[in-house]
Image 1: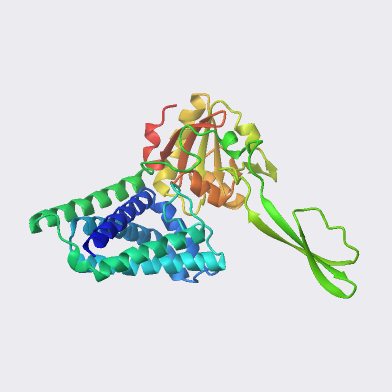
Image 2 (image 1 turned 180 degrees about the horizontal axis):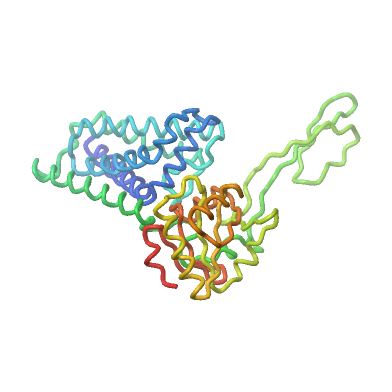
Length: 364
């Protein structure tokens, strides 16, 4: 039992720390995922949506700390029972997502490791088994330090988590796992290799044959059947290749101008997924950014999901001359975790990306 407890202790502790740190590296991304769960079409808890970021930060810090506490043997009973409560909660969310197909990516490991809802649920069930072992064998969890050492280690872990969370919220994630990271080329991210696997889809054809309904399954072509076709249903057996970037556009008056702008050798993109929610302090910096960019030969554009009326108001309020173009809100939230956020591109390759707090650091 002791060996089983120590093995479970290491596995659970390490996984909780890794999972928590990945989400703590990008708490805004995790908060967007929580908003999906809180929306009326899922858990129908809209009252929590305004507090999604605060909840996200608290959850991921607790996740990391519980992993640390388990490894060092600090507050053993509190730790194992908290781990049990958290994994039961996560198991409910992942099962709900998988069974009802509501949230297709639980965000357990952020953008670093993508899991399907069922994969996430099975992962949580395995962790649940290990945590139950810890609850049963809690007496075998021995501290690795003295009381003072445990308190110091716990305090340092808490301060480190707070510091990392504050840093990434005031700047950008320390490690960027998304397809829009610095050095990535957007055109390449949108392309599909010629040898990429295609989706495998079964077609279930329902026919009336001599007064009897029969179903014939093919991989696309209609079957050679003498009878009346009633209908056809499709079933995806395995998904095909999906490019990392599949929802990016630069739209104006119904026309997608992405291919044109992504050929620009000197392009500055100001990303604002919602003009209503843009930070006023960041917006005030855009006038000087525009002057600096245009004087150095850059073309500057704004990308938003907001309406033309909102665009006109913002341009007037902040004295902006550059044009706004439309893009999908989710795509804009993925591109940069800042509103506004700035990208500098050279023929579609992202050379610089900054939070609005760091606009002065741009090298133009």
